[in-house]
Length: 410
Ligand SMILES: [Mg+2]
Image (cartoon, rainbow, N blue to C red):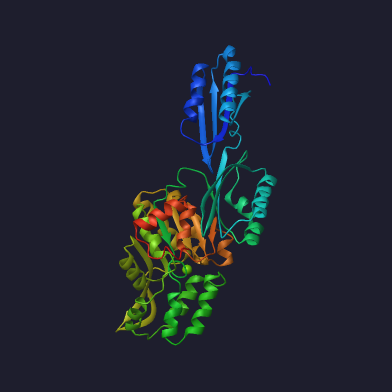
């Protein structure tokens, strides 16, 4: 191998200990080379160190190689000097980048093989793999790159079968500085923040539970128009005493991890909003209880202490949810790319699409097909992995906010 090029790439693989980089740099300084770039990581006690050099004096390159070779032999590690023939950096062609985050209980080797084969078939290069967590949740982050522009949708479509086969939750996000710098989260309430459809619970109290649930199911699955379905269901509630609303509001079941998620995101400085196709009465109560910043929902009209069967004001349908998300981001001065949206129903699709990160949470198939991320497990804190938080961070954050359900996580 000839060492006639102007640039050199020095690679060192060694059992890690303090001082290795300093020792290697001593030889590099003696050879009169400039450090153009440097990267190192330690994995399982093994150091991987790469240094890109230029300006090396031709006459001293062989001496550098010899010095590193003797040093490596004495220290029982591996040092390789590669000539770098071109100015083009090896990862430069893969300038279109995304991060694919996988969440699962465990990932068998065959699963690793399959996903890497899928990427290879699509001419997608894997630039970095990071294991965010390997406890009860196995969370993996792949930084991928392509020569041509790719969309999250293309990558997700290619992973559909893999996702089903291995029971993996996946997010595909463009790799920009906004990915880990989100500022606002907009959550749907029913079956997202809450583990129930409030209107169905009201239906039970009004003695029309079965009829109510059937309409809700169709509306959330996108089979029937949201507004007409809502007005129909509100009519079924006519005559329900206001007292029933108070009783129900005290017993709404939160989704596991909801309270911890809110506390962690508040700790990180997020603004938190509930935007619901349900009723303001309940959303106000939840916002008060958990210190949320915004709550937007439909106004259920109450007359003479009873539900009138009508709505007041604007209906919060899919378009209104989307508009609310946009206006909240504008009001706070955040880019839409800094917004996370989470929801399960057909009326959440537009809101999820507008957010920088739209997550279908235990969602109807129609929603999952259109969202860039989905979670089909029960704990809302899993969202945190999608914004780049790792298991170690999560443990610290759980401690900081005094999460009560850490033991059962997730
Ligand atoms: Mg919902």
